Image (tube, rainbow, N blue to C red; front, top):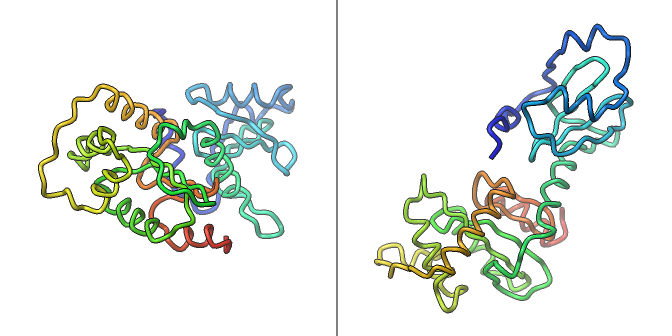
Length: 243
């Protein structure tokens, strides 16, 4: 995780302006906007720079954050951009960035559940109560193909790592996953797993969670659309064609 990313995840009302006095007193526009932007943000890893519908204003993406920069004046804008049709362009852009990250995931390494027409990618902590509620919600549908990656958050769920290994060591991972997520094994001692391949697979699952910038579970991609947490109204809306 990039150390400075936290600067950009604070919620803002309206716009906050960061001013670069040196740039503001220059009457010459930068020759190369992207180069100017990267020079301005030398301590951050800029993922992409794109033009916006507003001339001279550029969109910058840093992990999942979206901000706007005007190279000629050095003004940086944090907030949301809306179209005249009342579309939240910033939210749409964030959703597109998030969904783009799942294109090359190794789904063959995930725990596959179901064979329905809707594709659901899940990043899950087996001891997360909201993950368990989501699992119960999904279990009641027969129109899903689910791909589950385990992401134990051991700092708040110290047994999640052992439960993740138990699932990946099982001969039938789908059944083991259901047993753990249903809570049936919570008060039972788990047989320790020392399978090196399972441990390596769990490490791969964790790296996938990090690559997707998961900061809370469950993190879901439903037919390519990102959903953070157990937002059942949004989940059902996407699956049923209402969103």
